[in-house]
Length: 216
Length: 216
DNA sequence: TAATAAATTTAGACAAACCTAAATATTTAT
DNA sequence: ATAAATATTTAGGTTTGTCTAAATTTATTA
Ligand SMILES: [Mn+2]
Ligand SMILES: [Mn+2]
Ligand SMILES: [Mn+2]
Ligand SMILES: [Mn+2]
Image (cartoon, rainbow over all chains, first blue to last red; front, side):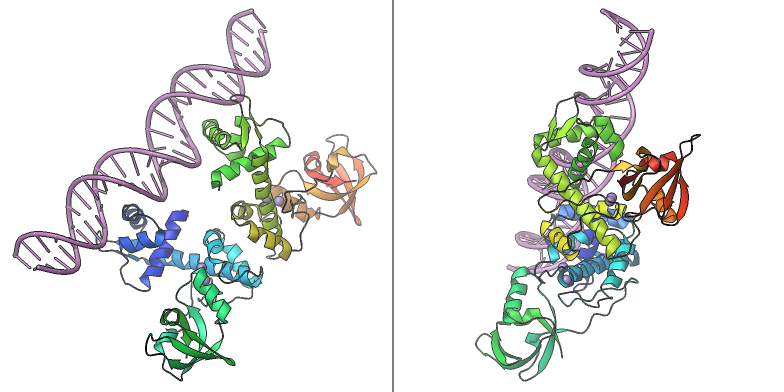
């Protein structure tokens, strides 16, 4: 199988690929908290294993084999996050670091049984889709609250920023997955937004609106 | 914190300490599937961290700090084994290797909540005691079936050999934790034992009798 | 287009955890 | 009490994944 470091690189390449076709050495170095030269070393190794397509100076893409491994790690990460929240009562802002370790537990039989034990959840505590055992999942079409018009409404289904501080802020405001919100007004000065949720109104900054995702 | 290798050495020293006061380099090499020279390297490192007492050529003992870490890893191992059997329906012979990985998940908060989730189990699927969050546990006084007299009885409470093949054999014979057995007879030729269990009799070899533990 | 800046790779090291082979210490047997 | 056998440590390497500093390639800008 693959080492822990290899798995983390593949997962990071996968995540970065969602925004850019080719993933750069520096993007990976930033995300993995390491140096560009270390990334280059690893990219050569992953290319040797044909898990990525690598042309020096041109960035990388995952091969089908690499993507399969990456998706499997993400499946494990999200199932363990779901477990931690639903079964062990952790808060949604507490589970990511634990899942970063747990996603590397190798047994697929274990993860399939965990999936069944929790009755095949479709989304993790942050609204991200959980791939099934074949690696299939549909990413629902989300847009940031900041992208919608005044007097339209939507349901909170995800977050762009996964940091504890952001998640804790949302929790405190009651802005959690599944809540229905309506944009009442947009302040022209700083484009902050006035939302209606259940029977109260609240104001969120543009920054927050950009990182809170809804379906319409 | 400590590396995975360090944790495995501490755990192994702990287990070997139950039989011998001082644990030797070769004992560790055999248990950890490595070479004596590698063990020596690690013993120096653990001694530097004051997790073991090490005198060259004289073997090692755990310090209080080292024992605390070892017991915590064993707590995690056994709780995860319990989880795998009780919640995910694995067989008792299938869980050890998975638990070998899971015992290194670092969060103690996680393991304490897992403990609570399962209602504070006292014994793992193999009958081994699960240390509580303070590292306390009592090892019940077990003896091998081979040590008891004809016409005495006992309750199966543990195994000395944890190999899949032995566990599978016991499972097939119905010789599982909690079963009450009586020794009906001992064959003089090979000292194999005739047992009475529920309403049937069965015969086990001396080898099996040595590795099956009971309370009287 | 040529210079400059930014991104990336290469070169050379290092720590962790292993290894083999050789040296040394301890134990056991004569 | 020696000699032989066994156990342990030391010496010198290897692999993985990291680092800094220097060289090189690509992108930007004047
Ligand atoms: Mn996460
Ligand atoms: Mn998540
Ligand atoms: Mn076990
Ligand atoms: Mn066990």
